[in-house]
Length: 380
Image (cartoon, rainbow, N blue to C red):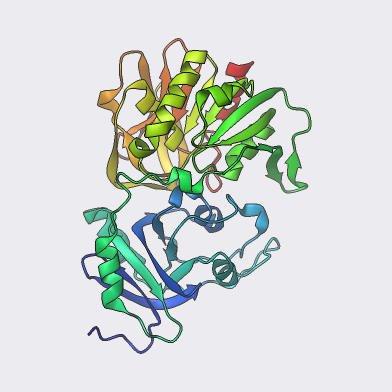
């Protein structure tokens, strides 16, 4: 029988039995997943609603979370796919003119469980040194925490490797998108005069990617992850976009790789981000593998190998393309300056390219925003 501190009504329990006691926030309940950490200083709502976090419990290394509240304008999907979050301090009282709802109330409305008061430095070091552990986050307002059951749940959870989560977060039917990027003066705009038609394959697409495509002059048609190449080409696109998303790219690739190969054979311009980048690499004959720690944050340095320019990027991925497996004619274009991993590729002589990082940011710097214009240039 585990002795629970009197002040604790929540905890993070790792699969190996280590317990981080805390105070609960958001929705009461139990959630299991892989614990990761994000180093971004801003944008917690965008991070929590990024579909790429499906199956994961997010640890924020920045201690003051909640300071700008939440707003419907900053959502990256309708229903968050993250399993929960871990915070150092109690949720900060919001102080921002855009605030529409306190983060605690927002978490509860989204059925997201949070635990606060955790030593996030210690937890981050644990992830850094030993890899991302499986864990259960539990919050019981009455303080009755079943620690043994939670630890068993974490230990028995199969993990993200081999798991196809894209189908879980993808849209279920095709739809059109015309909302453009947010501005201080007007909020979100509408693309009323598109010059190009892009079909975006939704493996877990962030809304801001679709907004960036619309702002770049595109009519966007979003299709489910399992859509075939013939179905996409029947929509007469000028270009095809492969979105970000969660899970193991090799598992998703069972149905996505034949689609991508069909698009490549058509000669249509093709642009992939994050999971879309990994699936494109698989379709070209390369291989992917799970990273020990992954890249998650808004301060990741990436070098454009063609120009020598260094970009500070926003990233969120736990799998990576193995550079050594790139076939002839596929060129590495970007490289991480943290660990040297592959961050971008292109196909020699063809309008096909992709990046591992997130040029749409949200949150994060916009150093790589030019990639949307590059895609539009290929369609033009």
